[in-house]
Length: 351
Image (cartoon, rainbow, N blue to C red; front, top):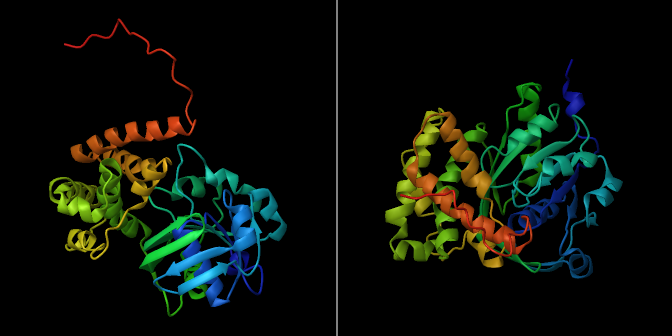
């Protein structure tokens, strides 16, 4: 018999580990640390030595200018070293979501305690929860949707848009709803403060679809064209390409019994007003990093196929971005090397 005590906080002050301290993860980490209601540790890979020595410099519209910030607990370079602080009450995953390259649901296995550890996915995308629910059927999985403009460039964090987050639970049939609700609200209580805007929302899928109206139409098109959202509008791409794509996303959501608000397109279009904002996929392309293509477009299109929803614009955009993704992977040696000479396939015939 499952009880609330099975999922209660293991420590008087909850232990939190944040994996992925980029633009979003760094502000989450700082906000939790600022509240002084939890023991905050971070896992940093490529910038580990620099962060240990100098911390982060944060220029935040929420918190101001902070130099040499480090979390109040520990900084780890990898999962194995982070096992030293087990058990964790919350593990926040704020990495890029690249299931075609890396599977974090398997990587975090050594630091997840059954029932006790709540996993929070502060990541872009759709269908993110599926592999976690499969691997951790007795753990609570939360959804963190962050509407924030923030980038991390060599440990210098620039936050230009307020941290507005929506926290929900991904429904787990093995755990009573009362417990999933309590855990969701407990996390909100240790993350929320007078500087940010953290809200509970009971329907994770609703906000995942709502975020896709932006990410699958603006984030993607900016990545493909190489322009920010302001220039996309000035150059005609918003009206001709992105808004028609938004209607396709709304149609998929409706077929999945998710009714998005009538003003969702207007809200999304004006979300970057006053800012020549570069969405995350565009930043990735500029850096030469693989994009979150599968979780933003691939999973959405697979859902559309399952629901028998035709979405030709999204499909064409996905086909084009797959080529860009292969180029990015090739440059990072993430796919097998191509033949030195291009093969000639005589059996192919085009008429």
